[in-house]
Length: 340
Image (cartoon, rainbow, N blue to C red; front, side, top):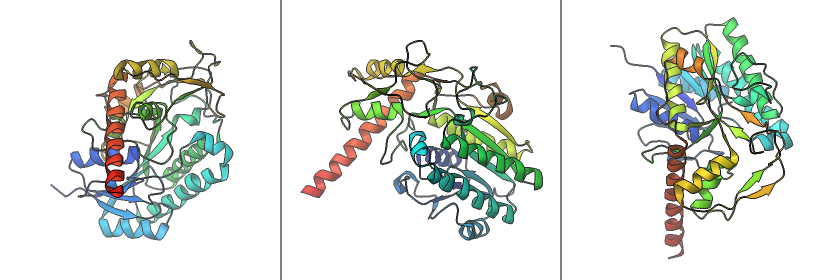
């Protein structure tokens, strides 16, 4: 049996990228991680994985890595992901997402890469009139983050029409949780995701948590989201790679569980799982937040033969809280050693 070609994972030291590295390594696949560590952490990349600190938009570097390591496929995570920041700094998102991806795709095209998996988002749908949202729903982003991701999907579509490249664009809904074995989780200097912030409150890192808007047209007035466990999402990337290698056509697929929870429901679940009161405070709506995002996920299951293992809100929350407590304990131990 011929040795499998390696997969280049851009942003592999980040949250979802590092979990995908774990999934591919568990499947016996060789992996090369490229990350500039602007938001990622070297500590999340296993020691037996080749790591290069660098920019995914550096065409010469990417072409050299493809040649040196026998890269046959690329999974692209690197980019900026904060909706609110994209509204205030739109050009940053067109630089870090669109321009970087354009350069990466040029390098891949020059090197003859045929399998490409892209980290896209439900934000490409904007505020859809109907839920659950199917892949054929109109793509009408309402923030620069969603715009930037949609432009990259367009680039992939057009490049695939002109070359032998085939791709899967995975449109994430709300990703949460951490590796059940504690090997990876969500790090980073800025926390914006609800379950991450709630976990920080439980771990004593934060004093409070805010509900950004309670006057939406939803059952309890707070935003409703479809939460998917990060390890299930990582498994979807592995399934997408196998799908392309078996000759699958290019496509865009939703990644979620097909049901949603409101902000208040999530916070109540955190309190139930941890026995700790969060006492959330009300805050104004954040710009760019749609009221409801819930995925239609039939295409994901049919196309990739994927099925979730962790479709349980309590499991998502428990793994996130366990990770946060572990990280917080380690940071406090390091601080104590530094003072000694």
